Length: 219
Image 1: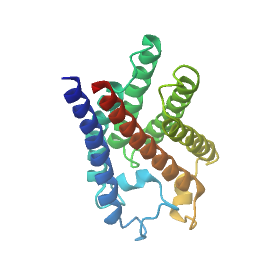
Image 2 (image 1 turned 60 degrees about the vertical axis):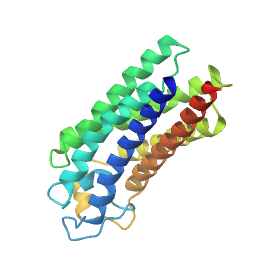
Image 3 (image 1 turned 180 degrees about the vertical axis):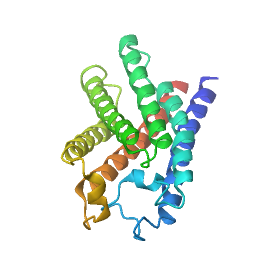
Image 4 (image 1 turned 180 degrees about the horizontal axis):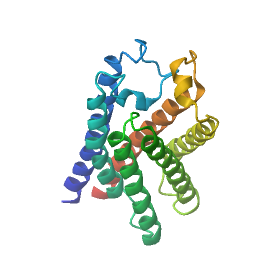
């Protein structure tokens, strides 16, 4: 019975990631831009894929983010360790808040710039603190049970998120003016995509870890 529940958990998590990835890929392919420019991860924010004024498939990007996120919330809540109740409660709150902020990013596209930026800042800060908390837990509380590849993926995520947060803070209130005449490479955009890549790596490692743990528990 537990094996079946574990499979459902893994599939739900994978489905959530695929839904969001589908929205990103398709909206990227059909992206034209406000100045008829092609989309590039080197000088475009992820959120621009959901900007209705400039992205042909903005609705798809936003709806995939809104629909896919609850699947990931369910997945991460299900794979939380049962060993330490207080730590689990803390992670539960953080995961739910991360999910809510991600949904808000989809609901408040870049056209509603103030709410969008607030949602994005909350999302990245919470992701950073969640990865930091996971690192501390894995290295000091459950070192024997969590493999190195899983911990390393979280450390990489922490580093990329911190760099992204620091670089984003350097932008002034004229950020939209910068985007009108954007350079070929915009570091904050590169770091944002790098943060997303490390989140995906962490997700893949979590799937491998949880799958192996589920198999081991059946023996």
